[in-house]
Image (cartoon, rainbow, N blue to C red; front, side):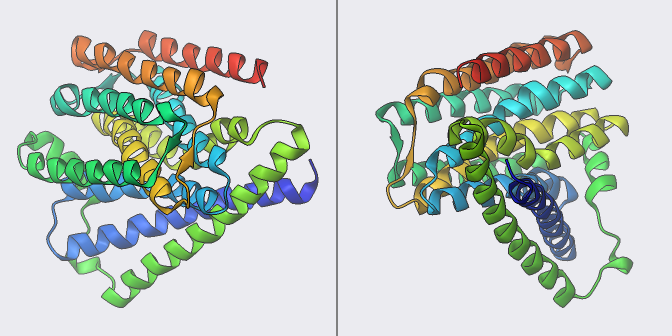
Length: 322
């Protein structure tokens, strides 16, 4: 691997992180300007913003005919979110799980993971299936907004402290729109650099683009989720830390995979290795989250260690067969 490839990868990760942050800041500020609840902002715009690197990367990969990177980014990000981020954050401090997550979001994540695996059985997630996933994302967002007002006051106060923007400090609307536009532009540039760098890295290492997408690309595009969950846990907002991971995984499957499948000329291809190993591991990890979150309404340090151990085992098998 030459220096240019490494610089391209690192620059791509950096631009994706900066672009996603700018997009979240601009859209959240505009939402606050129009009186949208901080809880709704946190459940929708912020979750979408932290998934923006995955969206930009998978769309860029799909448009350039690198379907393995597009799919690997989604599957790898979901595995990284559940096993590494949720497990690692729980090791730092045990995590509380909201009742809404236990009843709706975590089982829904497991169900959507199964649906994605089912759609992939024919070796491709085509445009019609991508539209189906996108429709699922719209339905999920409507569900989030509809249930937001029924959240406990303590949860609403947490989101207000995290995402509310004081009216007196609101910047001009033109500046907010410019911030959104700049964030989108940086995301597009960063995604192109990352996809090109990942493809060059795969060639240099003699590994498949799928493996690179499942590991390096997935971990890099999940950096916003790492930062959001760890900071929330350290600040005592432990339910937000869990909600961020679960919400991001749903966005990845419904939005990222859905959009990539819609824009790709022939849909997103599913390699046999992904169909028979990586997707089943993703489904299993999502299903494991259901009893973990249900028992005691928390993710303990022991359960965090179990999730991290599963990620290490997954990487050992994946890289051992690469």
